[in-house]
Length: 292
Image (tube, rainbow, N blue to C red):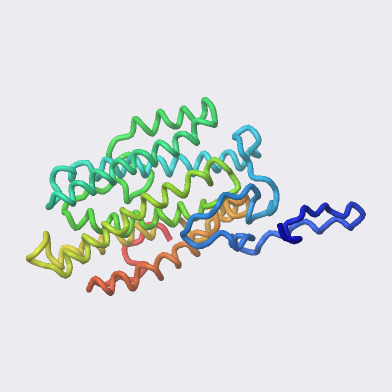
């Protein structure tokens, strides 16, 4: 064993270190948190107002405001997962190829598990959390919180555009929770992110094949462009209001890593070259927007 591996005890006479300063933005204090990847879990809070403090591990120890915000975020998360199942369900036996139907079945199973995961976190909040779960399970099509999840998949191109653009926003939301200050939520992220990657790749493949393999696959380039114009504005809306106070507080609490507008800008930068490679065109970011 080399001398570098010896246990070193702290100097009890040394001056106490200054408390860690919170980063100006939601950027994590630890370099180990890499964009979009998974890391070995850490116990301390990596950003916000409590950098270096042990993560919260139970609902009982959460401050009141943080408790309310986690419940709010998990209700929205679970609602989108269950709504997506309802949207995909008609295409389980209507997708154009056997492989497409198999992937549709995989997506539905993933969304159900992700909804279950969010509900497990809600269940930790006792009767209040269970009350929200009961409401979520009773919701039907057209009753969901976000516009994108109350719209039908009228054509196969809708399925591709939804997975490519709307599910990609979901990945940004999950990345924002990665290694957050609430331990149970942070630990749920790696598997969810891994499963969501299938949805993104599938959606982009479908949309690109429709646009570029006209006559060999299913649909036309015009349908692909129409689906993009339909779902891209709803995807940008999903990030929320640009000057959201809730977004700011989530960063301060160590729950989310970026403001809504920061995440939206990252998203636009990512999808722009993908759309160009598919031979399609993005509308102006303000086109048909409901939430700015």
